[in-house]
Image 1 (cartoon, helix red, strand yellow):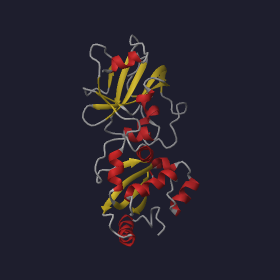
Image 2 (image 1 turned 90 degrees about the horizontal axis):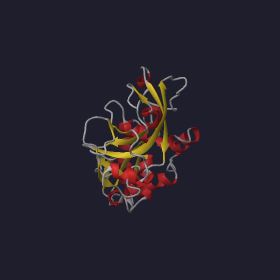
Image 3 (image 1 turned 135 degrees about the horizontal axis):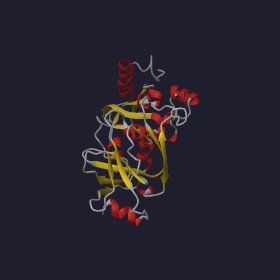
Image 4 (image 1 turned 30 degrees about the vertical axis):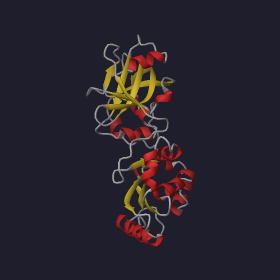
Length: 284
């Protein structure tokens, strides 16, 4: 199966001028923009007239090697020069330096093409060029279609970083993310939450112990984003949507045989090291 066959099966007129784009910038975190629903805005802005002759755009996020994951299809409606007073950036857009230069602005309308394959369709990009014309004679090959609700491969405890949305997806789709559930349930540990909204970087250090380990504790954040932590409750009262920018990682894994007292003692040391009581979200 290739991309050309797939879009024809789904009814897109392949005689139209279609571009495929792969977002994997070295200067900006494209996956962070995507998680915060800002990639569409960023994609509308280009330093060159890259989409001048386009009718449609198939958008992908760059992965390791030459892989790319589908994130949406768009119809180009119009184009003009960028004016920040008209094309106002979303609240919290982190890259205002990018906006301080001459830019082309494209009005792009998201269409219902391959919607069921968003975050699931993985192709072989096969080139360094970030944007390419669709070519029926040299179509992009489909590498895999990931299970519904799949997030990503479990990277190991030391490399683990999850956005709040990713955590929710992992928790709610056990079968598609079975390794995550197995591994996170197998250990106790000390974890870190960072509020990434508006670049605040405010930290909360927490701990997990007991039968279900880290998985059991992190499930509570899916049920209630504050996890019943006093300062997180206060933060969400002031900024109800900021939990969407929470980032979860693991500072240290511990055996589940450790007592709660032992785990909490280690938790206190990490709070001291990171200053999360004086400058972060820990209240004790």
